Length: 217
Image 1 (tube, rainbow, N blue to C red):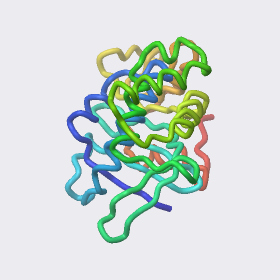
Image 2: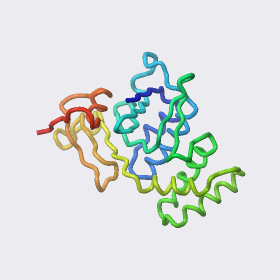
Image 3: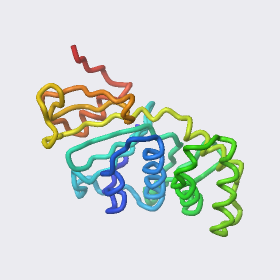
């Protein structure tokens, strides 16, 4: 098991506080997070602000956990993670041939920032990528690898789950102050009420397939 903890940058914190309502919202946050991870070593856990924390948990499950003001949320991390023991820096790769660096992570983010990418078809992904590469004058880019990566992300199941402490909108059993939101889209989301607040370790244990299940009834 590998568990890495980071203090969120101001930029990534703001991104994490923005609502996730579509697959595009989630993938853009993922791309920002990949860029953050390859530039920042894991932090001393005793110095991390509790509601400004990012946890990368790698075991039989691989997940990101964002711990921010009044919520904790998680989704699957679809990449391989390597660790340099000398400086605790992280390398992130897709399959066994595509490793992220500052340029490829910027390219991925630039592609995912295009709203029309999610309104078209997978056939136009190559064209959009080539356009970004030319406009930014990036060289030595594995276009085929990036294209496969984007298609994989557009199709992968993120397994999104969020804990909310929502004082503003609480409404008895219709909208409990403490609750879990399962899925992110308005068409598929559902709430599960909780009697009290939860911590990040409880939340991690909830989705950990190697620990005992929790019962709701």
